[in-house]
Image (cartoon, rainbow, N blue to C red):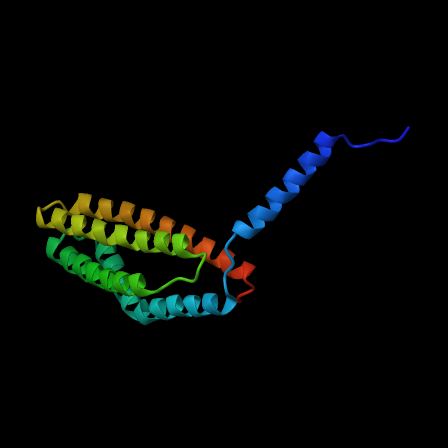
Length: 167
């Protein structure tokens, strides 16, 4: 006695095969050269602000370590940080991601945009005299922003690896 597939089994097999084929067609492909150029733009943008960011971070960390509650000092640093991040955000918004990376690029930009918005709130809080709560608000905003940007960058790198681009 031999096994013969029923018409239903053959039909279901065909549907599954067709579904897998359609899924493959629906997935967007990413051009390796476009991806490499995009990653180069992101790296150059990051490198262009690295020295200033490190100096600003050092000033901020020393201010926190000193236990100072000098509103003027914090206000100065937060304003510089806001100006720096707003400039990076403007440049980042001008970068055109390759096809297939639009959503991840938008998430990355949104993470930085959220930080700039939070910095506006933090500056306002300090101007109102609430330095301690402003610092807490900033720390929460930085954590959320970094999480969003890190998640987006992991997705961007995953796509880059699938396009066989060296990272």
